[in-house]
Length: 209
Image (cartoon, rainbow, N blue to C red; front, top):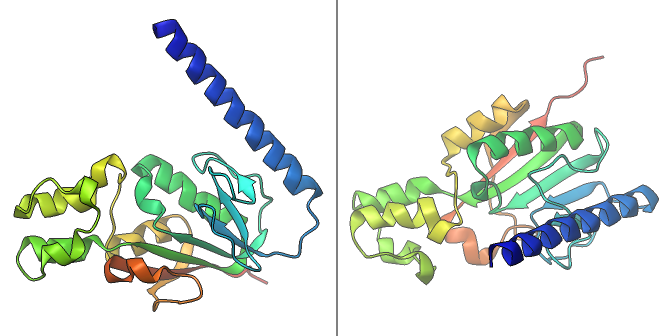
């Protein structure tokens, strides 16, 4: 049984490695004018955007724990929605630095993440927790501490959480400037997640003359 599991894991690993190599080759031959990239996109398609994720339907199949196959300063805009919270701190810092690398000077990084601060408000009784806890597999109970367990662990999916202060701090540590809150953008952001989302725009510093 152990040998069978090892073989399955070996085949899975090298299958995905092969898919990533194919994706890299696709980039090398892809003559596209797209200068906008969505990471962690799922199968979503957006006109004028290249998509990257570990799922079928994305333009580029890629594991975001690794350096992306793009050259430095490749994109004017990079977008991610409810992606960053799924990375451990160490992998998050690497990903933020990688996004900074592939953005062009003055390029914009558009972010949407769950806003952990509103769940803290629910914990101390300032908000109705029932309105926030909509993903049933992650609900342990209606007790105050389990409101925090809900958002911080999300049934094992969440690894690092944000409010506006620490999101701006960690993006700034990765080299971004002008990290400011932004409004909901109906052309990008998910209406169904707006009730719990924090939105931010960060810039890569312009090149010095």
